[in-house]
Length: 420
Ligand SMILES: Nc1nc2c(c(=O)[nH]1)N[C@H]1C(S)=C(S)[C@@H](COP(=O)(O)O)O[C@H]1N2
Ligand SMILES: [Mo]
Image (cartoon, rainbow, N blue to C red):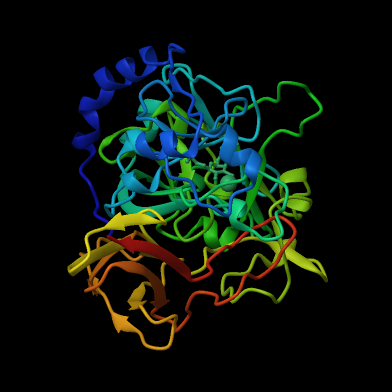
């Protein structure tokens, strides 16, 4: 899962960085689809459960350096990956979803970028240039980056927030320096409680609180939690955090700070808006192992690790297939890093389940592909359910677990196929 890489491997990336910097001109390929049929024909298949307004406004649009993704908003940029681009364990950089909270997106110059480290819980202050960061011993980890609110748009009743369908997620090979090694530049005091990470984002109006997050020390110093500067062997795309972002494998993407510029060690719970008021789940409702104890209240707790989940990506809901043979269903399964144990398929409404074939295991935090051939002897509609189980015995929810912010949607999917 993790390979110690030679320092030399980072050497050749300078030219690419310059190119990435130039690619930020704001030219767009925009296509607005008028009817459902046109949208389908152009490859935009949206889940039927999404709010009507979202379905009407979503368009396929290519940000600079990206393939066309499903645009939910431009300011701030929120673009999800169509399921057709989620058929492989690794999501290409140009297909990777984009999510920001604030409208003013930092365009960072790697030459002048600095990562400063300090705070009252640290033994001193330090600062790293981009070259200094890349000269530190690097590791690589394949990990799923999934928005806490992925599938929020499927909540019934609907809840407010970005109305994501299935594609606010992706999996990449992230290369960077363990956050622990970065923290070792200053050293932690015994009382160190949380590691606060900040990027360079600003709101369009100053009333939006700056996007700042904290991570408990125990998670921050795990060997897989890194300050990443490469994604799938390339510099991070601007939209995914150039020049460096925090990668917290297993945990939802809210902690994966893009354009990270400041790391603050604190001895008291960090009480910024994005910790205290946002990204919280009711206590005791979800089967969560990883706790963020210093941030818990009597009623709620910060979202931490992802719940076990799966998604059929070979076919869109309602797709037409050929009757009289077998149809191979394929997709992805993932969890918080306990590892996928099995993906099972049911074609009879959940009474009987058959194990699907699992693809290559590229790491416990990564997507695991699966495939399964389903017989469709006659014309008509077929309902196919997929259910993942992880190695600690957790499985997907059979009914939606309601929560105000629309997090952790992992209800077993039912895919409708029409054999014709
Ligand atoms: N600087 C910065 N980092 C950020 C955010 C942000 O708004 N600003 N959003 C977070 C959230 S909620 C998500 S889902 C992920 C999205 O990562 P991506 O845009 O690379 O897909 O970035 C995280 N890191
Ligand atoms: Mo998110």
